[in-house]
Image (cartoon, rainbow, N blue to C red):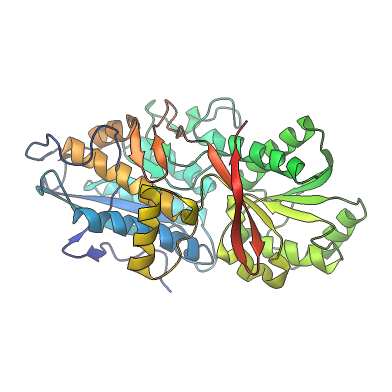
Length: 419
């Protein structure tokens, strides 16, 4: 499999390209003038994706990249009445040694895109902890990033994260980061409400001690207590442990009705589920629920038969359940790639449409202009609905969904609305 980075350019038809449409008003071309540039080739710009392309996240992130390629194919890699070409550079946040995103790799990639003046926009990251490291680096270079998957509230929302967040991520004082998925302050609350609806009265909470996992577990815990769900205990796990039988034996003795895990598949979620079942907590007795960090095929592969009955929330709607333009995208994806898109594929497409639309509006290799165009996106007619970026760079969409593993596959249960 690929190592830490991909070749610089991935050709798609004639042009190599990345896309993200932003900006509400129209689609690409409208009143574009002859492209001018502040840096690089006036007629060619690049966008970069920064995602974990090594390890078990690949099943999810490859579908995001596929969706970016869809947008490029649809535009032919051209904007501004064909006068400007967009090229795509794919960077890997992960390393083979870590098997997931790795901080030094993330920082190196961020510095790499900043150093290339032809790159005017980035799609990333998949992991919120990675975004925490790269946003300030990109911010100082006025380089915009649109995320299809980051959900940690502190990246954008004042008062929703740790001290000095989110200001600490924007040293130049201008926001350069936006996301097309709802944040965890909504998803954690939705998960707790769904737990109550499932009849859960007692829960034990675990997290993987990463920014994303701990953050969503915090929100889940606070909401669960407000709803009257008894929290029997809370702790962070060692993501590199060989087994969790002792932990699960301790939890079993407390007679929980659910274990909620804030974290990602790559931090041993599969082993947690296996050992939960190994000590006798059956699906009929004790439910297991996690956030979108586990809502992927990789979780089922890791947990095997023990994944049956696992619940997962998602900050959006699964591809198969989209309607209208979303349904058209879903059918086109399956035809083009002969496979089922993972949950975040649609949001990769949405991110690319937003970014490429912004480039098509400014028609020049100007990072500041592209950034401002992305951040000004309003009433965008996307495949996930019509939405805008608010002042913090968050999507105005708030509808989420719940799924359960049934017969070895994630199966949609219902939409879940944030209160």
